[in-house]
Length: 420
Ligand SMILES: Cc1ncc(C[n+]2csc(CCOP(=O)(O)OP(=O)(O)O)c2C)c(N)n1
Ligand SMILES: [Mg+2]
Image (tube, rainbow, N blue to C red):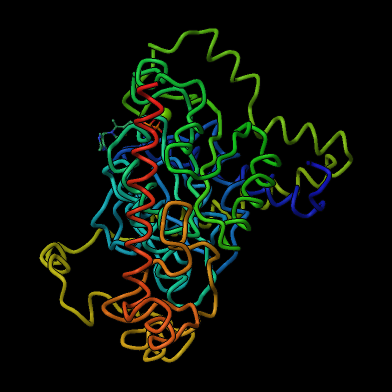
């Protein structure tokens, strides 16, 4: 799989992983100087996941990061200064100093939805973003991340089920780093592979080595393109390890030494660098150039952040409640006249159709009632045609009835089988 990537792609992945690590190293220094006002979470050893997955997205696609996905923000185009200033609660930060970690997004340009601290809640939100994109004819894919611990929340299951039944163009990355705070994954999930959770929702899943950036990228690229083509959501389990504690306060002494040693020897940046050097895609000079580029960039970005003022006190009472226009400027970008895609004409042929949507094995087939209000399904059958072929009943109702009958029959035959 590694051979499928171009040299530039390999080098981009390397650059962003190094940048991800350098940004976090800088923030550790700032934390020790007491300049970080919020929590500081580390993705040390998990950079290949944030970078490899987000690198598979197109510019128009949407993502919503979790705490350990600074790498994804960098790939999507967020400036390091914004990440520094956000953690330092500076006035020039995206939230103007109202948050001490990474709760910021960019709906207008970069298509980033702000993280939500309640684990799992981004899943239904991003499924909604994916469906909205389809409704607007934009052919976008939405992506978010969840931890092994977060995959046990109720909303993970509700959200994934919702995405599955809606065939949302949505890719969920499950970062199995073996720990949720101090709880080892084996004490909270009775499964070897968390990817198996996908089976419950009838969706496809992949398992990938989360420390192999090229494998993470290639796997995600395939999943993203499948989701974009209308195959529905896909779950990717990336297996990795959380090298530091939950946050700066946690020395993680509960982690067995052998486990730490095993994963430290599999550092994703060192592994990729070794591959690049052996394939002659990188040499000492180009490596030094990359290091210099990152050091120069971060020196400027850090200076800018440190020189930004703290917010004025009076700002505290602004932006608390939504004030309409000045609060949120985002507007839906319709690719077609709105009247064509909203009721009563919502049954017009979609720009982008999803084969099988609303016509799964147990539904009423192509005539399943998937539309809004009292409009007819978009099968091309007119209301009068539908009426004449089934004794005057609307097609959608007939289809629903047939489906209900089928279900009853199957349940009855199943119970007969069970009695035998
Ligand atoms: C619904 C919910 N419950 C509890 C928490 C508190 N909490 C924040 S992070 C965390 C551990 C998350 O572990 P995991 O999902 O494995 O992610 P990791 O920290 O390993 O990246 C917990 C319990 C929360 N934010 N939301
Ligand atoms: Mg975890």
